[in-house]
Image 1: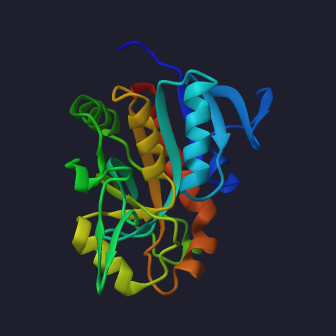
Image 2: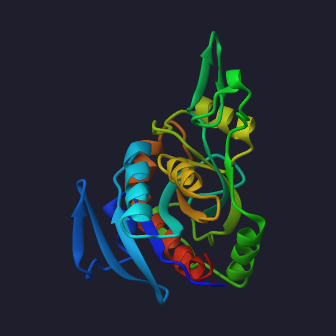
Length: 253
């Protein structure tokens, strides 16, 4: 496999803490700081995008256009949707879907693919799926990976987090609702929800279908009524688990 220049994105500084030491020369473009470095021995360009789809989309476009990145890795935290998963588990996205783009009707919302026009016969099926050969490489890279048990200070018991391949949702609203969490889980059969990945996937596809995007997310909360409390408390620890998985996958993207 020919090694492509890798673009690495995180939304928050806590999510970058274990990915890069920011020692490379920084370049400011459009209010973003980009710097060159390495992850797992692979040359990469790093950027802290800030939260939300617009921030992530702009940062991604700059990685692709100004720096010539042709592979993308996002690393951070997310809210859990699947009750079988727990805080600390890591979800690697094999599909990324923007759940909040679509048509609002009386009493219902229909999600469609961003930018599609169903009235003109466009395929509006939502979601960006990872190519099967990339999924295979990710599975092989994850074999034998064992994460350390959760710290006792987290208060979730000394369970050992697991790593899953799954579906990740993206929306511009922080999910702080049991009702919405259940609707997203059942409506999309998804495992995690966050605020950036679907936009990165959209820009990558727009640039060219051969640009792989891998989204690595550690569950920092369970996307319910107390998410705002869990998120703040567990963000640094969750970021570290996500980074461990990202380092494992970076060489094969």
